[in-house]
Every structure is written in C-alpha cells, then in structure tokens.
Image (tube, rainbow, N blue to C red; front, side, top):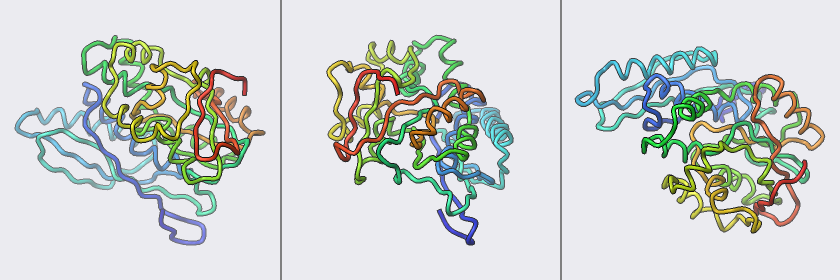
Length: 301
C-alpha cells in the first residue's frame, strides 16, 4: 500500500502461476481472479492490470496463448479493470498472471490484524481445490467436479468485498496457497488473540474428502502443515482427512472475513441473498490461548 493523498492510497500486488486446469481460456480466467483477490481482500478496488506471460513457443501453439489472454481479458472486463500493458518471455514452462493496481481510502484499508475477541469468521468459498486439482491432473476427477471447481476458482471475490464494506469488518485475507490454516496463522501469530474453528461449519467440496482419502494430497498441503502445525490443535473428533483439507493449498479461494459479532449473521445472510451461497460463519476470535488455532466439531454460531 502506498498513500498518495489524504483520501487515496494505491494497493499494488502481483501473482502468477502455472496452469491448474487443462482449458486455456479458463486458466486465463482463474489467473486473473486470483491476482485481483489480494486487492479485494484489503477492501480496495482494482483499476488497472498488466499481463505477465511465460510461454514455450517451441512446444505450444500460439492459439493456446490467445485463449489464455482472452480468458484474462474477459475476466478483467467483468471486474471493470483496464489492461494497460504487460510483459512476456519465452520459457519452457507456461505461466500466466498479472500485476494489479487498486485504490482505497487510507482509513478503510483492511489488514490481517486489527480483530477483537468475539469477532466471527466468515469464509466465502469451499475448501479443497488443491486436492481436487491433484485429482484432475491424475485423470481421476469427474467432469461434474471439474466444471464446478473451475467455475468457482474463476469466480471473482468482488461481490463479497463490496458487500463487506457496509459492515464492521475488522480484518480480512484471501485463502490461497497457504491454505485456510496457514493464512489464519498469519493473522493470529504475533497477535494478542487466538481463534476457534468449528469443523462442521466449514464449507468443503465433498469430493475433496473422497480424493484426500485416496491419497491425492498435493505437496504444498504437506508443506503448509509442516510449517504451521505447531500453532494448531485439533479435537480428537477431527480426522486426518479433514486436517489435510484445512491445510490444503487453495487456488483463487474465498475471502476470510473477521467481523463484529453483531454483524456476522446479517452479513452472511446478505452474501447468501446476492449469490454467495457457500458463505458460512466458521469460527470466532478468543482471548486465550493466544496465537493459537483450536479446531472443534460443529457448534451453532
């Protein structure tokens, strides 16, 4: 974030990755949705973007790149963001993403800190995309789940970001490569508080459980667990499959919103009303234990 005037600051972010779906058009859409998400998570409005492309000219038809860029352009148009340039290099491995610039009032910036005891946690997309993408790469995923997950990853976080501006939101992040627990650790570590999650309230793709039981867990998920498991305690009722899902490295996941307890249910109901059907209250901020995440079975919130 870089403050320009008393009432305007810039948000600058960059993100790119290798293909996680076979369809080049949808890969372009997902990459753009993922890159814009950091701006939405800070409460900002993305306004411009620049393409970042690495393409294996000797191994792929140029038509593949055209489809990727068309998918990206269509998603930027949906978001109301102007493409103002970009840069490409020849590489042996295909990569695509964007550098994004957004704007926000300095007093309205949302960070990963600033939450209070009693705040409720709202998650806006289901978990399990990393595990499902592993199944897709292995040729084991059904056409139905491929379509469902692809469309969800390509879905912008724009709507929940705009809606939450009307409520007392104290902190926010988007759930991507570090998984739900990894990103939540970024919030609670070096804070004065901890978090309790209620497993049964957390939205999860049912297929993710099935594929995780088959051992289709990506390396990034294991890395997330190794790095952050010291900060997490699981109730004995939480099985190993669900633990993997909670650490699962997500692509273009949802927003994780910490909101005043009085606003949590109205905000969730508003999200449901405007089409964010998977939004759920999944936990709450607690005073103790500090800097830790406790995962319990379902509880009404």
